[in-house]
Length: 153
Image 1 (cartoon, one colour):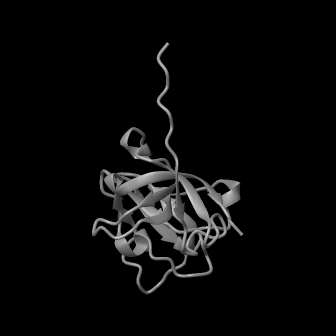
Image 2 (cartoon, rainbow, N blue to C red):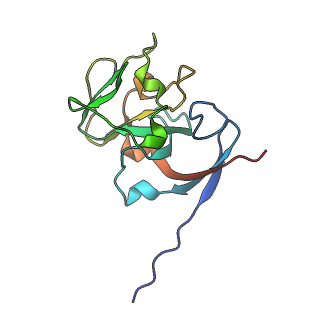
């Protein structure tokens, strides 16, 4: 029987508050680099990524998948015309449902390009720069899947 390859994990600092309450500002996140080289992204996963302009890394949550039509409304996230029912532990998240002046993508129906995902921050108390501002992020820019966070207080 073949042995499974060892899983490599790395820690990264989370300097921003865009993922609170799921990930506290200043927490360390434990992530699997290269995970998306062999796995498809899944809705609700938290990812470490860079923008196409090379800035980053940033941490956000996947809410829209390649080829889907997404719309962020005051009532929640609509995908392909249907309201999403997020997992219970995420019911108070997604700043994406609030409209901000800088929103360029997702307030109206937005078609996510093939090979890209739509990412949002969880924090509802602040304006979060995410796919609403920067657009969909190519899957090739997903650097790691976040598997845990550690608050080092």
